[in-house]
Amino acid sequence: MTPLLAVSHLVRDFKRGGWLRGGGTVRAVDDVSFDVRQGETFGLVGESGCGKTTTGRCILRLIEPTSGQVVFRGTDLATLNARNLRRARRDLQIVFQDPYSSLNPRMRVGAIVEEPLIIHRIGTRDERKARAAELFGLVGLDPAHAGRFPHEFSGGQRQRIGLARALALNPSLVIADEPVSALDVSVQAQVVNLLQDLQTRLGLTYLFIAHDLRLVRQVCDRVAVMYRGRIVEMAPAEALFGAPAHPYTRALLSAVPRVSPEDRTVRVVFDHEAFRPLALREVATDHLAAVE
Image 1 (cartoon, rainbow, N blue to C red):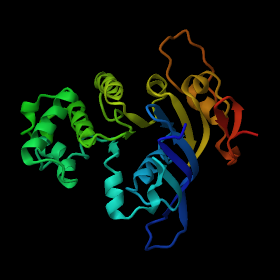
Image 2: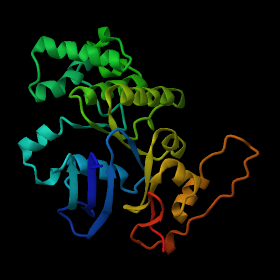
Image 3: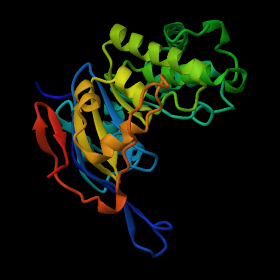
Image 4: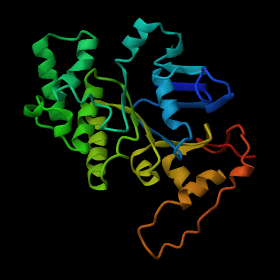
């Protein structure tokens, strides 16, 4: 089956100290390849600074990749001009990590949700307002509150507003960039349940970027583990959590807090100095790891 999204040999370099200064470059994303299948939730995990958010933004060309291919529905997004890229983005949307900085504090939340429709010139004014009210109800918010400003909502409610904005154009693929990491634990489960419910109802596909491994195990069908800008392991979620093949993956999993005090899982220490970038190879069916 042809994947909905295919990322091939994606690279993104950043200039140390900015492009106007000397100091060489930093490779934030290093030869990353994976595909996302229609209707699944594909997890991209790793510690802070490993390149997972940069990967997500390169896919949408919010950050221009240095090299590589991003093919969505058979079209290489890197080849699109500004007009055609705008059209493609109707089908590709993102939910940002921070619900406090991702919403314009000077705009009423109804206008925030309507904005994608205005940009893409969809519907009349009344139709856009009706669509915004529909989206508010879809994400569990009262449409009567559309005239309020973002500061009048809690973090969880703001993330729902961001999700409503992302869904305004009926996208096929939503990149969820750490969508619950800035929220209280009590609110996280509500937002995750909402994401799963919307996926079922609307037929969405998710690229789920996260560092919370317990959450990833709960929501993702397949998972790729990133380290120093590279994917070091990729497998169905249960296979990866049940039989991790890469030493870094084993170290990550051993660091997950245990609910039961009787769980005597031994902490695995990863030797960062010994890391060598290797090509992924198949270690089991649909299970790839960068090991010898």
